[in-house]
Image 1 (cartoon, one colour):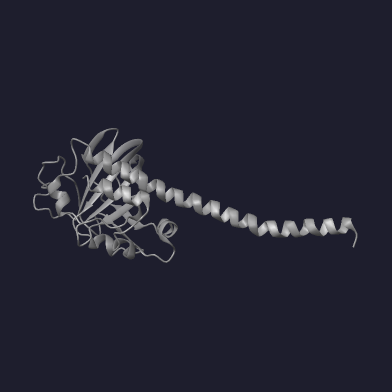
Image 2 (cartoon, helix red, strand yellow; image 1 turned 90 degrees about the vertical axis):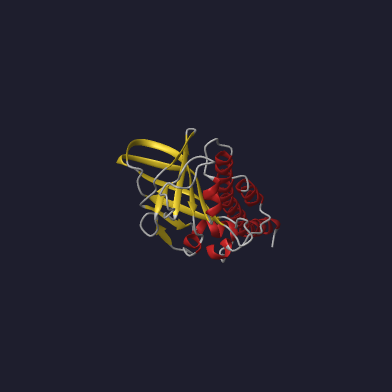
Length: 233
């Protein structure tokens, strides 16, 4: 075999070897991009919690003490001409037996209506759940707010009594913040679902939402920061 043939074979071998190497690099880059989306969602959720905590008008402490679960959806898109619809991605946490918050489960919220409106707006949304079982039993399914469970616009004010429905019969209380305005709103008709792909990206493909809700320990920086912000509510 002459030198030219040897060079040709060497080049072919290098090309064959480079294909799997390039594929591996591409997979790593795709995974990193997907992971960054979940990290960004956690960071945005932390900003929402911090903003709510620092607001003069916020979720009443009495209601927070009674609550066992929270859903935080940053920058939810509320759009419509006539009857408005909405879509957002966020996280859900529940209280553990020791009073601390669980690791966040990624969720989505779609559908529903705020009533008659024109145009598109972005709102930060927080849902306060009286009982964590509503969230932990969802697993990989979904449920409709106002259909499967009762919901009401939440009372506003740190010292306000949690008496929007007087007897606290609602299971979910909702709050929104848009352009600096804070208010309790209605989310009846909205569908809340577990974001299985986001949970798989962040925690691993074999991790269920139920397992995440039962866990409070995490070394992930964005998770630690979110829990720290939740303590400030």
